[in-house]
Image (cartoon, rainbow, N blue to C red):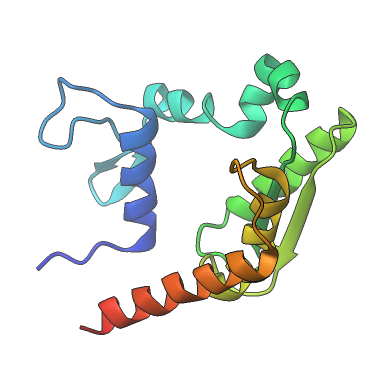
Length: 160
């Protein structure tokens, strides 16, 4: 069986999300790198399409819409295997600061998915609980309890 590492998954997910190409079976997307001999070479045409869809690149075109958001929050890991995420997030945060757009940017110790359940309960769900309108009010205790149940259920399912 073929094992796909993190970089390959990132390349495939970026291609699928941002460089769809119905004329390119079997996956129907273009990838930003190609193997030439034993080296990966950037495919500028595809790479540029993907970069054009990043939050930092899109900020200039969508500043008015970004200002209308009720909240912006994102985080990045100090030891992320995807080495471009932390500097990109820092750059995006600085761009938001320069535009005086309120946001929260946190850097956490660890890798891309480390302490996700904890971060979900202490940061992500409270953020959404405070800002989203559900038609009824939920307490953070109710939201955290449901998140813990979902995480526990996910752990139970993955153990089977």
